[in-house]
Amino acid sequence: MRTLFGTDGIRGEANTQLTPELALAVGRAAASYLGRGNKGAIVIGRDPRLSGAMLEAALAAGIASTGLDVCLAGIITTPGLAWAAGRYPGAVAGAMISASHNPMQDNGIKFVNPRGIKLEDDQELAIEELYRHGLDTLPRPAGAGVGRIFRDETLAEKYCDYLVSTLDRSLDGLRVVLDCANGAASGLGRQVLERCGARVDVINAEPDGININRDCGSTHPQAVAAAVKAGRYDLGLALDGDADRLIAVDARGNVVDGDQIMLICAQGLLRRGQLRDNTLVVTVMSNMGLHLAARKLGIKTVTTKVGDRYVSEAMLRGDYNLGGEQSGHIIFRRYATTGDGLLTALQLMQVMAETGRSLEELAAIMERLPQVLHNVRVGTKEGWSENAAIQAAIAQAEARLQGRGRVLVRPSGTEPLIRVMLEGPDEAELATLAGEIARVIEEQQR
Image 1: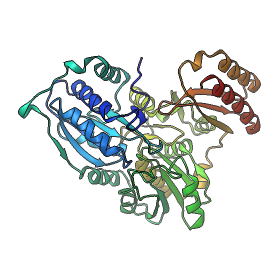
Image 2: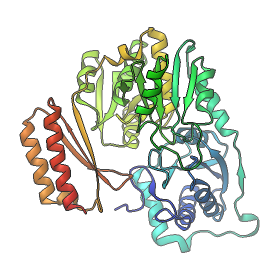
Image 3: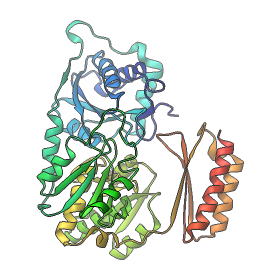
Image 4: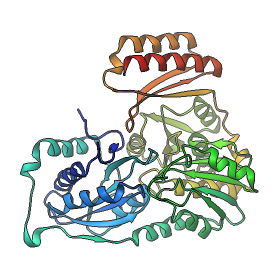
């Protein structure tokens, strides 16, 4: 059983749970496993949160202590780091230091392989086993055998060039507000969109290490919605702290979530004959309205567990080229190996430019069924699925819905939360049922 790695790498409060000592040890274990005794480098990137430099130094020291080199890419988005790891000469892996959309006091470490793809479960288990039981046996070369640590902060600029190259047409004339969440895309978000022809105003692009994700970005789209409504813009775009997800708003300030964005882009690919096997990969969190709309368009859906890593795995197995999550992690496999908020923004605006239609018109392709989500903060996530009281509350809600909707309860892989999601025709009823399940979970999982 994994206790170090969650669904998206290692996460925790920086310097209390995710300590420099842990980062150093994980660096040694990961480098020894991923390097397999070969000389090479691990590329490290980070978002701008305050603890990032501290953890970067510790992780780099651990890697170099095994004899592998370290290339520090500096502040870069998570998809940018994955892109760099897949193209950096001699790279055996990449490591991103970020807690994505989490508050600034949290941080995380996630690894990708030399193709820029997140590690598989068994690979993370192997690293965790070395971390827990094998550190004393790992290589510790001396003299010229110690790994070098050097910086190459041109990688973010090269990634920016790559993003611009993915478009088939100009975005000339589109007016957009971009919310960078005071995160990793703050330095390059405007540059990417402007080079593609858009007229861009940027908000929340002044990171100070503390303000990342604070009342802004994809988890708080009301910030960009207010900016759009206050000006004359065609759309707003909200990234999260590491820019691997995107939420949009239309010209009226209405939120366009990941489900709608995926469907808009899927229809665009279908129209060009580029949607592989006419299939879209989604997770169990996607709204039922997506499945209904996809069926009308002649698009098949494949459903996975929550987590973009599972979306990616299903896309690789089926050789599909588009998939993602309602939260805005969307993978365009022709161009990227992971969710990429800036790439998604470009692809979404390209559909607008191709069709001449507003985002509001495009988003109307899908009618969302009412969906209620409660994030229940708990003292422990252990044992919730075997708890009789919790299971009784879930069963009671399912009986009340009687096939008219669904209940999905799952633990967060990155935070001390249990998520309660209900979907059906009556939002008031859903809110009542979700509240009852949440109350029982709070009582039982203190």
